Figure 1 (cartoon, helix red, strand yellow):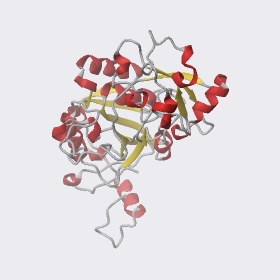
Figure 2: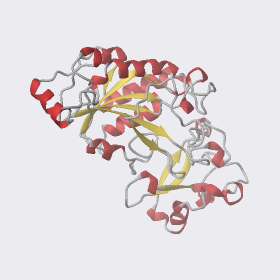
Figure 3: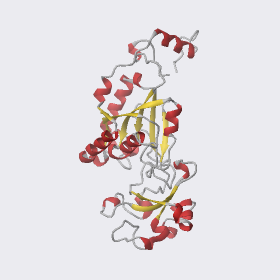
Figure 4: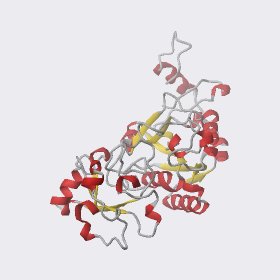
Length: 336
Protein backbone atom coordinates (compact mmCIF):
# COMPACT_ATOMS: atom_id res chain seq x y z
CA UNK A 1 0.00 0.00 0.00
CA UNK A 2 1.20 3.49 -0.77
CA UNK A 3 2.81 5.55 1.95
CA UNK A 4 0.41 8.11 3.35
CA UNK A 5 1.55 11.34 4.93
CA UNK A 6 -1.93 12.32 6.16
CA UNK A 7 -5.28 13.60 5.05
CA UNK A 8 -4.22 17.21 4.58
CA UNK A 9 -2.87 18.46 1.28
CA UNK A 10 -0.23 20.35 3.27
CA UNK A 11 1.11 17.00 4.41
CA UNK A 12 1.45 15.65 0.90
CA UNK A 13 -2.03 14.50 -0.01
CA UNK A 14 -3.62 11.08 0.04
CA UNK A 15 -2.43 8.08 -1.94
CA UNK A 16 -4.79 5.34 -2.99
CA UNK A 17 -3.72 1.85 -2.04
CA UNK A 18 -3.22 -0.33 -5.08
CA UNK A 19 -1.83 -3.70 -6.04
CA UNK A 20 0.13 -1.89 -8.77
CA UNK A 21 2.79 0.13 -7.02
CA UNK A 22 5.20 2.80 -8.16
CA UNK A 23 8.86 3.48 -7.30
CA UNK A 24 11.13 6.45 -7.83
CA UNK A 25 14.35 4.74 -8.94
CA UNK A 26 17.39 7.01 -8.57
CA UNK A 27 20.52 5.78 -10.31
CA UNK A 28 24.02 6.42 -8.93
CA UNK A 29 23.47 9.96 -7.62
CA UNK A 30 26.71 9.73 -5.65
CA UNK A 31 29.65 11.93 -4.74
CA UNK A 32 31.88 9.98 -7.11
CA UNK A 33 29.84 11.10 -10.12
CA UNK A 34 29.41 14.76 -9.14
CA UNK A 35 31.32 18.00 -9.56
CA UNK A 36 32.94 19.70 -6.58
CA UNK A 37 30.19 22.28 -5.95
CA UNK A 38 27.68 19.63 -4.90
CA UNK A 39 29.71 16.82 -3.32
CA UNK A 40 29.83 16.13 0.40
CA UNK A 41 33.54 17.00 0.58
CA UNK A 42 33.76 19.92 -1.82
CA UNK A 43 36.11 17.92 -4.05
CA UNK A 44 35.21 16.68 -7.51
CA UNK A 45 34.09 13.07 -7.73
CA UNK A 46 36.44 10.37 -8.96
CA UNK A 47 34.43 10.08 -12.21
CA UNK A 48 32.60 13.38 -12.14
CA UNK A 49 29.78 14.27 -14.50
CA UNK A 50 28.28 17.78 -14.84
CA UNK A 51 25.21 16.71 -12.89
CA UNK A 52 24.85 19.09 -9.95
CA UNK A 53 21.77 20.59 -11.58
CA UNK A 54 19.78 17.38 -11.28
CA UNK A 55 19.92 17.36 -7.47
CA UNK A 56 17.52 20.29 -7.13
CA UNK A 57 15.12 18.56 -9.53
CA UNK A 58 15.25 15.24 -7.66
CA UNK A 59 14.78 17.02 -4.32
CA UNK A 60 11.81 18.94 -5.73
CA UNK A 61 10.13 15.76 -6.95
CA UNK A 62 10.64 14.12 -3.57
CA UNK A 63 9.32 17.01 -1.52
CA UNK A 64 6.43 18.07 -3.75
CA UNK A 65 5.28 14.76 -5.23
CA UNK A 66 6.15 12.08 -2.69
CA UNK A 67 2.48 11.06 -2.98
CA UNK A 68 3.22 9.51 -6.38
CA UNK A 69 5.63 6.90 -5.07
CA UNK A 70 5.22 3.86 -2.87
CA UNK A 71 8.99 3.41 -2.64
CA UNK A 72 12.14 5.42 -3.24
CA UNK A 73 15.04 3.21 -4.33
CA UNK A 74 18.66 4.18 -4.91
CA UNK A 75 21.27 2.28 -6.85
CA UNK A 76 24.81 2.68 -5.55
CA UNK A 77 27.99 1.97 -7.51
CA UNK A 78 30.14 0.38 -4.80
CA UNK A 79 33.52 -0.80 -6.05
CA UNK A 80 36.34 -2.52 -4.19
CA UNK A 81 39.92 -1.44 -4.92
CA UNK A 82 41.32 -2.96 -8.09
CA UNK A 83 37.93 -3.44 -9.72
CA UNK A 84 37.97 -5.03 -13.18
CA UNK A 85 36.52 -1.87 -14.76
CA UNK A 86 39.41 0.36 -13.64
CA UNK A 87 42.01 1.14 -16.30
CA UNK A 88 44.69 1.08 -13.59
CA UNK A 89 43.88 -2.57 -12.86
CA UNK A 90 45.23 -3.42 -16.33
CA UNK A 91 48.01 -0.83 -16.62
CA UNK A 92 45.82 1.28 -18.89
CA UNK A 93 44.71 4.89 -18.80
CA UNK A 94 41.10 5.76 -18.05
CA UNK A 95 38.97 5.89 -21.22
CA UNK A 96 41.52 3.75 -23.09
CA UNK A 97 38.53 2.11 -24.80
CA UNK A 98 38.01 5.36 -26.72
CA UNK A 99 41.43 5.13 -28.40
CA UNK A 100 40.24 3.27 -31.47
CA UNK A 101 40.86 -0.33 -30.41
CA UNK A 102 37.63 -0.85 -28.51
CA UNK A 103 37.26 -2.27 -25.02
CA UNK A 104 39.45 -4.79 -23.20
CA UNK A 105 38.59 -8.45 -24.04
CA UNK A 106 37.46 -10.67 -21.15
CA UNK A 107 36.37 -14.27 -20.70
CA UNK A 108 33.52 -14.73 -18.23
CA UNK A 109 31.65 -17.43 -16.37
CA UNK A 110 28.09 -17.60 -15.15
CA UNK A 111 27.05 -19.03 -11.83
CA UNK A 112 24.11 -21.30 -11.14
CA UNK A 113 22.66 -18.64 -8.82
CA UNK A 114 22.41 -16.19 -11.72
CA UNK A 115 23.56 -13.38 -9.41
CA UNK A 116 26.22 -10.76 -10.09
CA UNK A 117 28.08 -11.38 -6.85
CA UNK A 118 28.73 -15.01 -7.89
CA UNK A 119 30.00 -14.34 -11.43
CA UNK A 120 33.51 -13.52 -12.66
CA UNK A 121 35.47 -12.32 -15.69
CA UNK A 122 39.18 -12.78 -16.42
CA UNK A 123 41.30 -10.73 -18.86
CA UNK A 124 41.78 -12.63 -22.10
CA UNK A 125 45.32 -11.26 -22.21
CA UNK A 126 46.10 -13.27 -19.08
CA UNK A 127 44.42 -16.43 -20.33
CA UNK A 128 45.75 -16.50 -23.90
CA UNK A 129 47.48 -13.34 -25.03
CA UNK A 130 48.66 -14.96 -28.27
CA UNK A 131 45.02 -15.06 -29.37
CA UNK A 132 44.93 -11.25 -29.43
CA UNK A 133 46.21 -8.91 -32.11
CA UNK A 134 47.24 -6.03 -29.89
CA UNK A 135 47.84 -3.84 -32.95
CA UNK A 136 44.08 -3.69 -33.43
CA UNK A 137 42.69 -4.88 -30.08
CA UNK A 138 43.01 -3.14 -26.73
CA UNK A 139 45.61 -4.90 -24.58
CA UNK A 140 47.61 -4.07 -21.44
CA UNK A 141 51.00 -2.41 -22.08
CA UNK A 142 53.82 -4.39 -23.69
CA UNK A 143 55.45 -6.65 -21.16
CA UNK A 144 52.49 -6.57 -18.79
CA UNK A 145 52.17 -9.71 -16.70
CA UNK A 146 49.17 -9.92 -14.40
CA UNK A 147 50.97 -12.39 -12.13
CA UNK A 148 53.70 -9.79 -11.60
CA UNK A 149 52.05 -6.42 -12.19
CA UNK A 150 48.63 -6.99 -10.61
CA UNK A 151 48.02 -10.47 -9.26
CA UNK A 152 44.97 -9.32 -7.26
CA UNK A 153 42.71 -9.37 -10.32
CA UNK A 154 43.55 -13.02 -11.11
CA UNK A 155 43.85 -14.36 -7.55
CA UNK A 156 40.68 -16.13 -6.34
CA UNK A 157 39.11 -15.32 -9.71
CA UNK A 158 37.20 -18.43 -10.74
CA UNK A 159 36.98 -17.25 -14.34
CA UNK A 160 40.78 -17.33 -14.57
CA UNK A 161 40.66 -20.98 -13.51
CA UNK A 162 37.65 -22.21 -15.49
CA UNK A 163 38.39 -20.32 -18.70
CA UNK A 164 41.99 -21.56 -18.71
CA UNK A 165 41.06 -25.23 -18.36
CA UNK A 166 37.62 -25.28 -20.01
CA UNK A 167 37.28 -22.25 -22.30
CA UNK A 168 34.17 -23.74 -23.90
CA UNK A 169 32.37 -23.04 -20.62
CA UNK A 170 33.10 -19.32 -20.91
CA UNK A 171 31.86 -16.44 -23.01
CA UNK A 172 33.50 -13.26 -24.27
CA UNK A 173 32.76 -9.73 -23.15
CA UNK A 174 34.53 -6.40 -23.64
CA UNK A 175 35.21 -4.16 -20.67
CA UNK A 176 35.41 -0.37 -20.91
CA UNK A 177 38.19 1.30 -18.92
CA UNK A 178 37.34 3.90 -16.30
CA UNK A 179 39.06 5.88 -13.58
CA UNK A 180 39.27 4.29 -10.14
CA UNK A 181 35.87 5.45 -8.91
CA UNK A 182 33.13 4.99 -6.34
CA UNK A 183 35.39 3.08 -3.98
CA UNK A 184 33.71 1.41 -1.02
CA UNK A 185 36.00 3.31 1.34
CA UNK A 186 36.04 6.44 -0.83
CA UNK A 187 33.51 8.70 -2.54
CA UNK A 188 30.77 6.12 -3.20
CA UNK A 189 28.71 8.08 -0.65
CA UNK A 190 25.53 10.02 -1.36
CA UNK A 191 25.89 13.84 -1.31
CA UNK A 192 24.57 15.72 1.70
CA UNK A 193 22.83 18.14 -0.69
CA UNK A 194 20.46 15.33 -1.67
CA UNK A 195 17.26 14.46 0.17
CA UNK A 196 17.56 10.83 1.20
CA UNK A 197 15.37 9.27 3.87
CA UNK A 198 16.09 6.41 6.24
CA UNK A 199 13.09 4.53 4.84
CA UNK A 200 14.56 4.54 1.30
CA UNK A 201 16.11 1.34 -0.08
CA UNK A 202 19.66 1.14 -1.46
CA UNK A 203 20.69 -1.54 -3.97
CA UNK A 204 24.46 -1.82 -4.41
CA UNK A 205 26.13 -2.89 -7.63
CA UNK A 206 29.71 -3.33 -8.81
CA UNK A 207 30.90 -4.66 -5.46
CA UNK A 208 32.15 -7.92 -6.98
CA UNK A 209 35.73 -7.14 -8.07
CA UNK A 210 35.41 -9.42 -11.10
CA UNK A 211 32.04 -8.24 -12.53
CA UNK A 212 30.93 -4.83 -13.79
CA UNK A 213 27.33 -3.65 -13.79
CA UNK A 214 26.13 -0.36 -15.27
CA UNK A 215 22.49 -1.29 -14.89
CA UNK A 216 20.75 -1.42 -11.55
CA UNK A 217 19.33 -4.76 -12.70
CA UNK A 218 22.10 -6.76 -14.36
CA UNK A 219 25.78 -7.07 -15.19
CA UNK A 220 27.05 -5.71 -18.49
CA UNK A 221 26.64 -9.04 -20.27
CA UNK A 222 22.99 -9.18 -19.18
CA UNK A 223 23.43 -12.71 -17.88
CA UNK A 224 23.70 -12.06 -14.13
CA UNK A 225 21.27 -10.11 -11.95
CA UNK A 226 21.52 -7.81 -8.95
CA UNK A 227 18.93 -7.94 -6.17
CA UNK A 228 16.84 -5.15 -7.74
CA UNK A 229 14.39 -7.10 -9.91
CA UNK A 230 13.47 -9.59 -7.18
CA UNK A 231 13.13 -6.80 -4.67
CA UNK A 232 10.78 -4.77 -6.89
CA UNK A 233 8.65 -7.84 -7.56
CA UNK A 234 8.47 -8.67 -3.86
CA UNK A 235 7.18 -5.16 -3.19
CA UNK A 236 4.60 -5.36 -5.98
CA UNK A 237 6.17 -2.50 -7.94
CA UNK A 238 5.29 -2.33 -11.63
CA UNK A 239 5.92 1.33 -12.51
CA UNK A 240 9.34 2.98 -12.37
CA UNK A 241 10.17 6.69 -12.57
CA UNK A 242 13.90 6.76 -13.34
CA UNK A 243 16.41 9.59 -12.88
CA UNK A 244 20.10 9.87 -12.09
CA UNK A 245 23.61 9.49 -13.53
CA UNK A 246 24.67 8.97 -16.22
CA UNK A 247 22.02 9.30 -18.93
CA UNK A 248 24.09 7.45 -21.51
CA UNK A 249 25.44 4.70 -19.25
CA UNK A 250 23.81 3.54 -16.03
CA UNK A 251 20.44 5.26 -16.54
CA UNK A 252 20.11 3.95 -20.09
CA UNK A 253 21.18 0.42 -19.17
CA UNK A 254 18.80 0.36 -16.21
CA UNK A 255 15.83 1.59 -18.26
CA UNK A 256 16.41 -0.80 -21.16
CA UNK A 257 16.93 -3.74 -18.78
CA UNK A 258 13.66 -2.86 -17.03
CA UNK A 259 11.95 -3.03 -20.43
CA UNK A 260 13.81 -6.11 -21.61
CA UNK A 261 13.06 -9.84 -21.46
CA UNK A 262 15.22 -10.63 -18.43
CA UNK A 263 13.22 -8.67 -15.86
CA UNK A 264 9.60 -8.35 -14.80
CA UNK A 265 7.18 -6.32 -16.90
CA UNK A 266 7.69 -2.68 -15.88
CA UNK A 267 6.13 0.56 -17.04
CA UNK A 268 9.17 2.84 -17.32
CA UNK A 269 9.15 6.62 -17.20
CA UNK A 270 12.48 8.45 -17.56
CA UNK A 271 12.70 11.98 -16.14
CA UNK A 272 15.14 13.22 -18.76
CA UNK A 273 16.16 16.57 -17.25
CA UNK A 274 16.88 14.84 -13.93
CA UNK A 275 19.66 12.89 -15.65
CA UNK A 276 23.09 13.95 -16.93
CA UNK A 277 25.46 12.44 -19.50
CA UNK A 278 29.14 11.52 -19.17
CA UNK A 279 31.36 14.51 -20.00
CA UNK A 280 28.18 16.53 -20.49
CA UNK A 281 27.90 15.25 -24.05
CA UNK A 282 24.69 16.58 -25.57
CA UNK A 283 25.04 14.16 -28.48
CA UNK A 284 25.30 11.14 -26.18
CA UNK A 285 22.49 12.49 -23.98
CA UNK A 286 20.09 12.79 -26.92
CA UNK A 287 21.10 9.40 -28.29
CA UNK A 288 20.48 7.75 -24.91
CA UNK A 289 17.07 9.39 -24.54
CA UNK A 290 16.22 8.16 -28.03
CA UNK A 291 17.38 4.63 -27.20
CA UNK A 292 15.24 4.51 -24.06
CA UNK A 293 12.20 5.90 -25.89
CA UNK A 294 12.64 3.36 -28.67
CA UNK A 295 12.78 0.58 -26.08
CA UNK A 296 9.39 1.68 -24.74
CA UNK A 297 10.15 4.20 -22.01
CA UNK A 298 7.92 7.24 -21.60
CA UNK A 299 10.11 10.35 -21.58
CA UNK A 300 9.11 13.03 -19.08
CA UNK A 301 10.50 16.24 -17.62
CA UNK A 302 10.57 17.31 -13.99
CA UNK A 303 7.80 19.77 -14.80
CA UNK A 304 5.68 16.92 -16.11
CA UNK A 305 6.09 15.02 -12.86
CA UNK A 306 5.37 18.07 -10.70
CA UNK A 307 2.17 18.64 -12.68
CA UNK A 308 0.86 15.15 -11.93
CA UNK A 309 -2.05 14.86 -9.53
CA UNK A 310 -1.75 12.83 -6.36
CA UNK A 311 -4.00 9.77 -6.50
CA UNK A 312 -7.32 10.12 -4.72
CA UNK A 313 -8.52 7.97 -1.82
CA UNK A 314 -11.95 6.75 -0.81
CA UNK A 315 -13.29 6.75 2.75
CA UNK A 316 -13.10 2.96 2.65
CA UNK A 317 -9.43 3.12 1.77
CA UNK A 318 -8.78 5.52 4.63
CA UNK A 319 -10.61 3.29 7.11
CA UNK A 320 -8.58 0.25 6.03
CA UNK A 321 -5.31 2.20 6.26
CA UNK A 322 -6.24 3.41 9.75
CA UNK A 323 -6.98 -0.15 10.84
CA UNK A 324 -3.95 -1.74 9.17
CA UNK A 325 -1.62 0.74 10.88
CA UNK A 326 -3.25 0.25 14.31
CA UNK A 327 -3.86 3.95 14.63
CA UNK A 328 -6.58 3.71 17.27
CA UNK A 329 -5.24 5.30 20.42
CA UNK A 330 -2.03 6.38 18.65
CA UNK A 331 -2.83 9.66 16.91
CA UNK A 332 0.82 10.59 16.39
CA UNK A 333 1.86 7.30 14.79
CA UNK A 334 3.44 7.66 11.34
CA UNK A 335 1.59 5.65 8.69
CA UNK A 336 3.65 2.95 6.96
